[in-house]
Length: 153
Image (cartoon, rainbow, N blue to C red; front, side):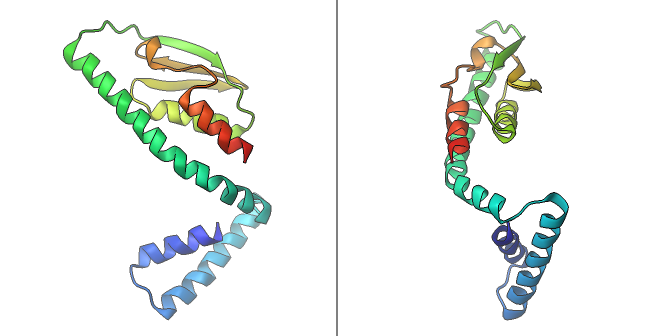
């Protein structure tokens, strides 16, 4: 987190001088210490996040692609009214193990047009979708497959 906070500081300043770098290092260290003290976030968690970062960065284009595809499908269905939409609630079980994985899955589904995660209880997710065909509930679905890779790291 220290590196992320420092890079964010540099980005917000817009110029690179010795004073900006020095002050950024001090402020990032203070915020990092505060974060560790308040939330129990330490070097071990930092290393775990750094190990997952490459897979997460590879997941973002997949997420954006799925959002784009779903947006085009929803737009087509609304504009051309060829398909009769049957809004429904779908409850399915996921095999994701971590709370972060379930959080990421629920938010990825919600970001995708035409679907919204209504409830997450344990391993079960309840999703409202414009049509049941819009939701891939299989364990080998795009989102779950990528999130499982993050959990494995």
